[in-house]
Length: 199
Image 1 (cartoon, helix red, strand yellow):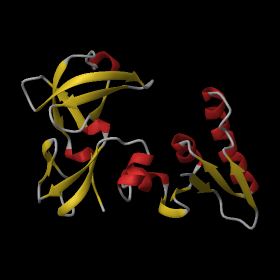
Image 2 (image 1 turned 30 degrees about the horizontal axis):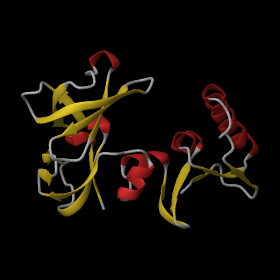
Image 3 (image 1 turned 90 degrees about the horizontal axis):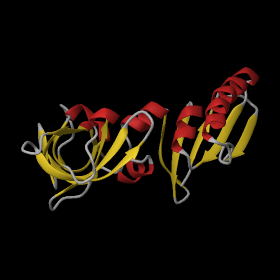
């Protein structure tokens, strides 16, 4: 599995294999900006192979997700992030809230119950992606009842890991001050704007 990217088409081609993998985070973030500027100034096309999704999306004009030596999806970083081609790509990008569902006109039947879907979503048996930002925490008496099993600080937010009764786990993104504690009971509602019906 690898993400590859190309910048500024030109006759020159440079290939990099895990170019920033051994650097600390702050140096890596500074170098990403400098490398983009350098490659554009030189008019050089660069193919970078990396397993670091953040690095690929920060450097890339185009992202290619590979699976077993074949292209699973290609497009701009925004296209790939917003519309993963399938469950493999969604999970490779780090999304965990991926389930099979039966999609209707306004909602999908899922292991988590009825989940709203965006207007015009394809119907039938599909794979559903619920981004963590689309998992909204509400009081325990409302929505899908879940237990908080873990919290992971992500810098800009807290990833809250939830276990519903008799359903797959969920991950929610919360502001630090609003994140519940491990062991707390919460309710979950879903935001259709953060749900993607995958092909």
